[in-house]
Image (cartoon, rainbow, N blue to C red; front, side, top):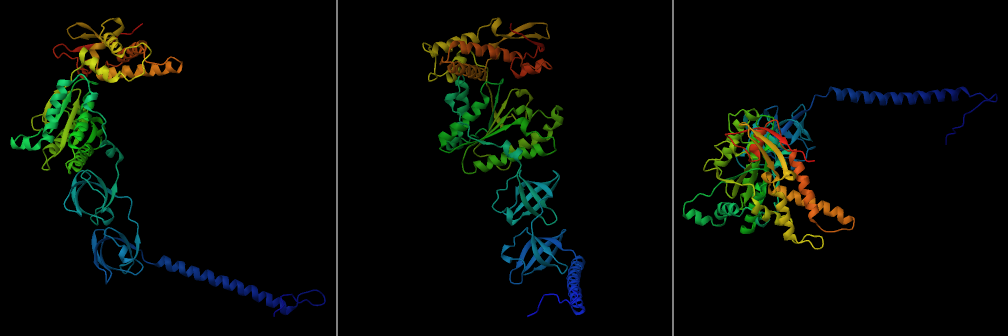
Length: 510
């Protein structure tokens, strides 16, 4: 057993042998460290001298016994061996593998998450698709194994590798998906008032072909592809479209899908993007209707998207968007169980090719409600089951509200209008009345009633509704855009072509 104690001579100094031994120990330690550093340096030099590794995309699994695969490297195809460091059973078409200088697969890499995006045009078969790149060239690509099981539809956007010919990843487009909202309408015919004759015509046009298809077939009668609802804002066009979906669901025993598409939201500044969105909408409709489920494709504010071609509006985007819509309506793939419903405040701006027979067959004007219709509509909102103040009769209350709305006096005067001929007119609240306005009046009255109930006086009263009418009158006085009075008048349905409006002045109440 060695003694670690330092030997010292009688004078207290370290002996010469011990000093030499200590020096040798230090030198040995330094040598060992130098050898380790030299070894690491040699490894680093060797690593730096290694040839670069190549990335290849697996395009074919050739032979599992010999571990042979075909890979694509920058557009060139090679047959290579996969080393034991890569699990054969986990290899898939479209995977990225690392290749050494001998072109042997030595590792598996994550596929690139950036690259070229392409828009799906159609499926050729279960594994191949046609896509367009940069809205120009059309390419035939194969779906990678990682995309199998993913629903790929025309109009979808994919991340693709054009060198290998594979589509690698589905790219979600929230702005597109949001436009194709699969909505539960939650509106039935009973909720729509004052439009009995119009609703009867719509129901006969839409419901009969779907509930009695055999009868239409026996008479060789082609069901209408769609209808156009036009009229001023707030008269119930959107509610009618939703009620169609609800009614078909009840009659057929299948939940109808309602695709609510707002025209302005489909517009896109990039070339080809709006057309892609139109294709995506109809692809979604065909997909959902494949099993006999009715689909209502509702285009709100249709004039914003499908204007007459050559008008110079919206930078002539209509020259490409309108043909795309026509192609979808008239396409080789028939629109079965799909009803197109368009709504517009300016039907005169819609391209005539869209509203001709064989496309949007029926054109139905939704008028402003008259006094009797307003009474019926008000009954839908000011219902018997609401909490009224003691002594208040709901029926009598509704009559008083209608009387006030249709009174043409200073309290309900909204606008002073001057026409080109010099003629001046005064427009009153009743001139712009709509179902939406009556609903707004009732909502404002309910809000006032709630506030008063918190003060200990529950129940809806006449005073709440009269105050709401005053608020609605004041709100309408600020509505018209005076930059183009005639355009605004056409939107609200008060235009006279032979005597257009040149000025609109709000009448301010004291």
